[in-house]
Length: 222
Image 1 (cartoon, helix red, strand yellow):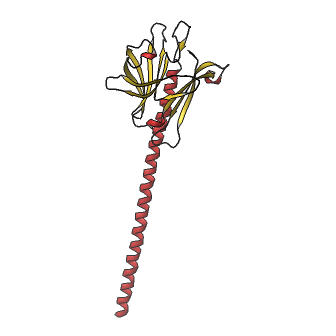
Image 2 (cartoon, one colour):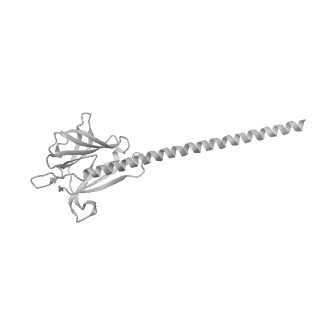
Image 3 (cartoon, one colour):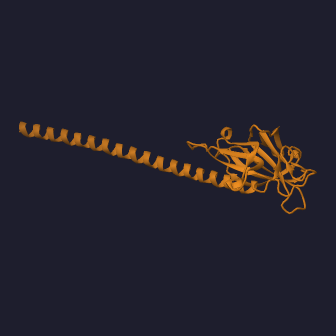
């Protein structure tokens, strides 16, 4: 009888030990599963943000290819600092008015979170356009009134044309437009010409590395 009790006790201890080991294994597998799900969701979110940022920059580049087109001045072409403006500390208020500080474009690059440019694609009326990085998003604007030249950016009435990158997707402080006078060829084809060199730099809030694009805009006298 005593031996039977001892055997029963050993069996119970072995059973409890096995259950404890099994529980530890189950908890470990659940923890691993949770981490895998988290990493999968985080990767999907980063991929979505990266794709949105890339698409937004591409749309911005397409819009900027026409910057200065059709703008006639006494010198015969659009001018930087008149028909192309870089604005630092730019904000867009509830009345859709732009605020900030205009910078002078020269041979050394100046950087801001907004750019304003004029064009005349139909050769009938000057129009003002703008890109602004605000609230962690990239927005394309167009003036509806009060903008006879890009220098009127602060008094013009703006409307949102498109949110190219949704709010919160960009690192606000690390997303900029840098512009300088220089010499380049659009798409690297042909002989270099006097032009505006624009570099767009964007950094997602959850991305490890910044992305960007460089444009050669030849419609401006420098």
